Image 1 (cartoon, rainbow, N blue to C red):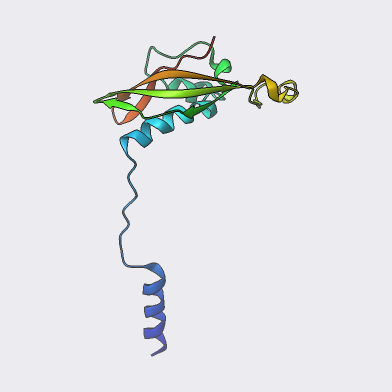
Image 2: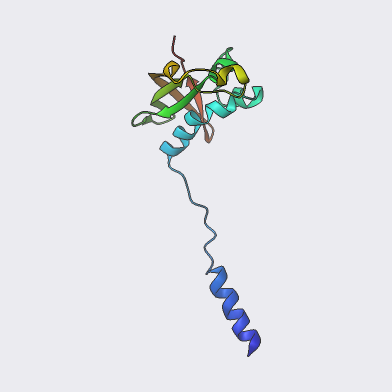
Length: 133
C-alpha cells in the first residue's frame, strides 16, 4: 500500500505527459533579434551572426552605446520584416568603463528608427539596423 501511495504522489507531482515546448510567434522571434543586439555587440562573432551575410556594420562598438526598444508593430511579409525601433542613447555601457557612468541623465536621447530583418533558414537576422546621426 505504501508503494501505491508513493506512485500516486509521484504521478500527481510530475503531471501527465505533455512535454511540448512552447512555440514563439514569428513576431516574437523578430523582436528578440532587435532587442538582443545590445548584448550581441559585446562579442564579434555574436554580432556578425546577428546580421545577414554582407550586412554586418563595421562600427560594432557603437551599437553597445545604445539600448533598443520595440516601438510599434512589426510588418512581416514572408521572409522580410520591418520593425519600428526606439534607439536610446546615454545608457551606461560596460564596454566603455567608468567614464560612461559619469554621464548626466540629461544626456539621454531617444531616436525612432526603422530596422529591416530577413529570415535566413529558420533564423531572423538584421539586414539594416541604422543608428542615429
